[in-house]
View 1 (cartoon, helix red, strand yellow):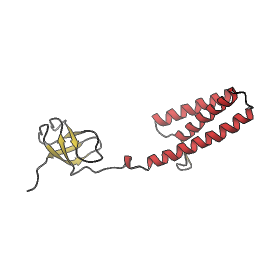
View 2 (cartoon, helix red, strand yellow; view 1 turned 90 degrees about the horizontal axis):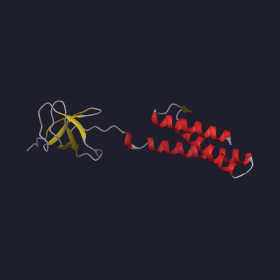
View 3 (cartoon, helix red, strand yellow; view 1 turned 90 degrees about the vertical axis):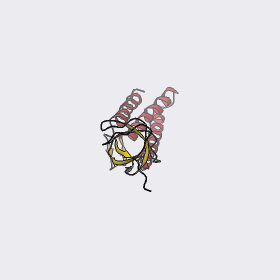
View 4 (cartoon, one colour; view 1 turned 180 degrees about the vertical axis):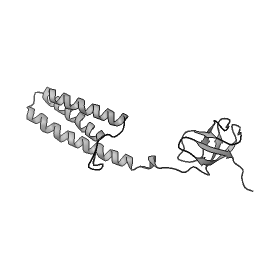
Length: 156
């Protein structure tokens, strides 16, 4: 039982480190990550403990733990690959996107709500000229954490 508890605890530590700090283990050029190894080890330990507590032979605990742990690691790795292939992490150029100033915007601070489908929340913004809250704006420059905007002036 102690072996399963130690392997499960080590897997939990690896899983938490991978989720908080980032992937520190990457085997086979992305074939196996620290997150999936952690999941596999946690499941290995949990299944082994469950089998031992139910008075089944130790060899059954090792076989069941290995089979279910490998399956859990495989499923976790497939899910990680699928999530990393989504467009959520894709870079979007916001230059030219229109929106509305939700606060007064100055050269130092402000906030806007953009009309782009990818923009679900408000963004920090700044402008070379003062813009009042409620004014329609257009993005002139897109930086990682903010956008430079100007008043939207429709062309007649």
